[in-house]
Length: 208
Ligand code: AP5
Figure 1 (tube, helix red, strand yellow):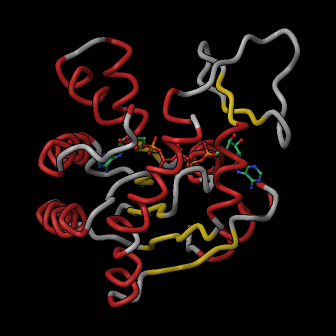
Figure 2 (figure 1 turned 60 degrees about the vertical axis):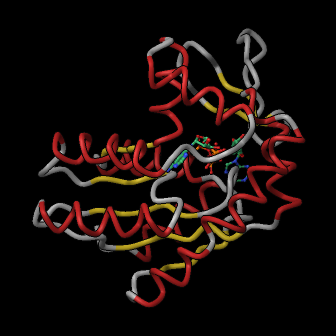
């Protein structure tokens, strides 16, 4: 059966960074709801127009809208090993995911919980920079971009929005920790370590 792994954790915990590594080294398909929404915003689609309003304020989009997007993706990727990064983010999304996967004859195999403090998240996100041409993610302190590259900052990486995103994570997303603990699927990793150490910890804990 194709594998489904969820990356759960606060904004800026390094979920995207690790998902890219697993995609590159093990051929997982990386599904990031944030990336899907940012692409829609940059193309100015109907979805993008709605998403922009929510994302700028650090708020979550309505569950049904996001569940619909994931349903389409899952149908297209029936036999692929996938990493879900940024979904589910509410208990309603998690319940919908369980139903969708069941219909497709698959299940959540593991949920990796990225553990990190709010202070560290603020430090990481306020220093995050992106190469708009390649989408490659840098950090001004931990992984500085080459001098010849013009990088940009995400609109929601401003300090007031980061604080709002953290608040929403603690109130709406952190209940998923209990949800997956009860299903015996939760694997916690120390996300404060350097990227390669976090990666080694993840691959030692999931069966690939
Ligand atoms: P989304 O794009 O999913 O944002 P997020 O969860 O807040 O996650 P980030 O992308 O900010 O962080 P990350 O954990 O991937 O960290 P990264 O690897 O980049 O969502 C954005 C918005 O979309 C939401 O606010 C919401 O509005 C909407 N949305 C998305 N999904 C939704 C859903 N399911 N329902 C409703 N709305 C939804 O790393 C961060 C930085 O740290 C980088 O600079 C990186 O270089 C650096 N770094 C990474 N790892 C390390 C390390 N180990 N040590 C030092 N530095 C590191």
